[in-house]
Length: 330
Image (cartoon, rainbow, N blue to C red; front, side):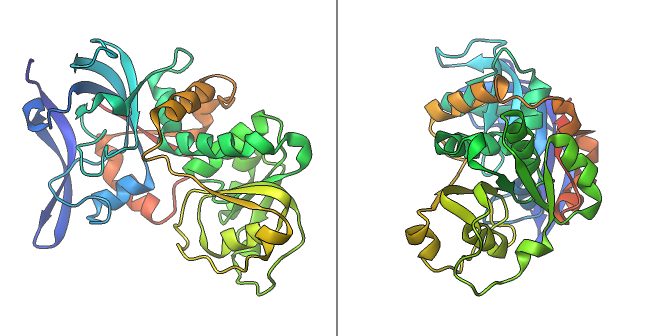
């Protein structure tokens, strides 16, 4: 197998200090996992920012190249499922956490981490969706099993973020009325363009409310933040509603009685995209590429290169980014 030098965004640790820079590496430096991929696009996620700033709960050892998303072409494969020049998507599993990730021009991963790029998507579109879009897709997969558009409004928290904005766009396309919760008061036009019928200030849901239940308002929900917002969403969900939960940036704690669950029959469904089974992964990507593909997908995206990553990492940690940040590699 030919060895190639390549550029990568590398995080190094020295004396408890973490530095970030673009370095030249060699494909021989990568683990030999069976599927060598030339990366064309990646995307910036909150987990990437944590890895890039030395969070040992995400990445144990450094130097390290973050990037939990990658779309590219196969260079070498030891699997019968993939051939040279196949276009593939890699998200989740250990990519970008403890395995060198998509912020480098090459990755080497186990073949079962990869999914062939659906014909209806190009590589940039796949990374506009990325882990955030895939997570939104998993939430929508669970919601739409039981909740139909005529059952009522779906509420989405963190609505200007990657998962939230993609959820709003897909649900709206599928005919659901969507209420978007956001703390970014200046993004009303953005959320309405995605299809939100109602914009709810985050403060309305962010207070600790002692009542065990509130008025049943929503047929279902996609919560991306946790904490008081998730608690109040659950308390405000109609009988037999479904609340999906995929984030804890506000808090990992949940202070509730069981009353919403046993009196209204509400289901709280946890969603994890990291170790999703391959059959569900393939199904979800196919739906994202076809009937769920948001109209005007580009409006969700901001394009950057590796040279812009450092400044965007600082912004995402402050909650200052909206939509999706796509990284053109190479």
